[in-house]
View 1 (cartoon, rainbow, N blue to C red):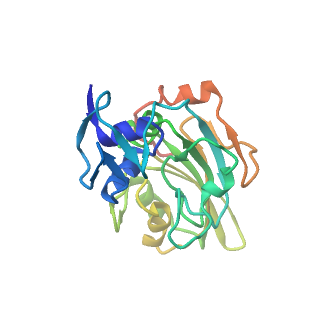
View 2 (view 1 turned 120 degrees about the vertical axis):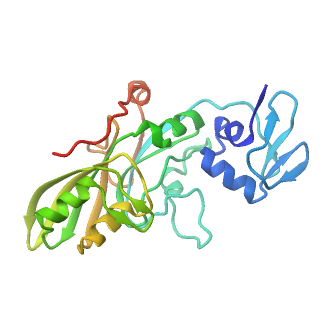
Length: 245
């Protein structure tokens, strides 16, 4: 059976399809002993010998699903060229290889999923599924009602116009304003750039929910295994756009 190389690697726990693509570009993958650099190749998973970092890629491992409460100061990456701490340092007692599903910025806290299941990761990350993510945000000052409405309807940032989002004001304290945001997309530094565009700096940002999965009272820097019903819930996520509240 022929299959794309990146999908094959993802299904065997090497990384998400995006990460597997980067591994190919970086020359970390071989097909039948020959190094490949161009992603998108099709392979015969029964006949071809696939190697990653010099080791043969074996059968699909038992699936692992973790939820981590990421602290500030950790890179959401499997490794870092500058030797900064990564989220993998927080789950280093897990013997099996796992990788982050999506990203949280260095200075952003909260819910991060890690897995070795490429199909599960793809289900959460694929834009067409519009999995909603909920964030708590503190910003300096008090954005006007007009600015808040702009954020709700979609606003132009460096990476393009954002999709409609839930933007709910929760309260104010000492000149700062507290919001809840619900998005179904994940542009780079999106929330920070959204508020920068309306001239308000994000002081604190935390993701508290992905789909039906809530961070709950999981302590900062700790992780737990997902329950089967939590994993299954991502197969039932609605695809509707966010509605303003």
